[in-house]
Image (tube, rainbow, N blue to C red):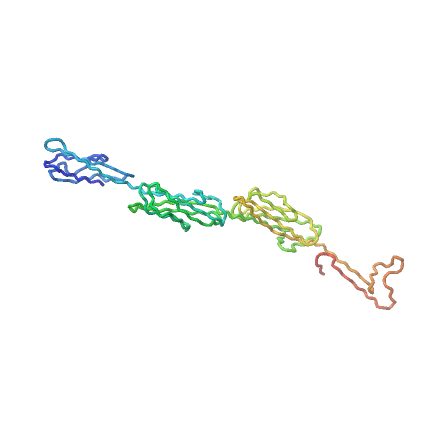
Length: 352
């Protein structure tokens, strides 16, 4: 709102009196005649402040009864304050406004940088930065002149999976007008993991003895590989301690939760058998993750033998090599004692 106080500082009446403004044009006044020593107040229509420094000049012109017109001018100013602030948040040096942002190893350090800029045209004497995830943000305690930038910092530990936090700046100009801005940032906490489950003839035989398989029978091993982490894995490799590299078609990329199955075959050998599967893959940070799983079977080779003796003599053949009767000579009517020695000649317990 502009007001114009016009005073007749002379000793004669002025008629007419005209007030103009170099920016607004003719100004409406309550009268056109102004007596000597009198004054009046004129008011311009209400306007809206524009941005930045504004200047307008009032010009009052009066016509006396004789002689030339008399004039006076007066300057007036205001500053159109347009406070504004901007914040840009970086995660490990990346302006990651959208997911996923940088890939960061779970458990490692995260550095957030908050760059606060006074994008308005007035001083911001006070301003604060906060983070919606409760991260403690350290900032310099300085006023920000227009176009000045200050840098704040915060640190944390990477959590697994997608993480988003939002930095917010709130500032006030000298008149107490508050302005604010916010900026999101993202990262993905890489938590790779792989699992192999090995079974022998359909049994997950992690501990001995595992299934009993007759010696010479077929043995089938199955290997189920699962990506149990939260990132895709590449360059998959499957190895068996007894069989060597397992040849099968593995996917180029195994996504989180995905599985692949391989098989191998062999022939049962006698006794306790153990082999261990090892699987590995490469995560997006070029780290290799591994897992192993043992499996067992028992190669059953049953056998039994009986040795019979008559009165302590093992007379297996009825005739000796020299043609004489074999076995002990026993007088008719004497006692005969047979003994039977039974031996388990196999590699497993037998019953019944």
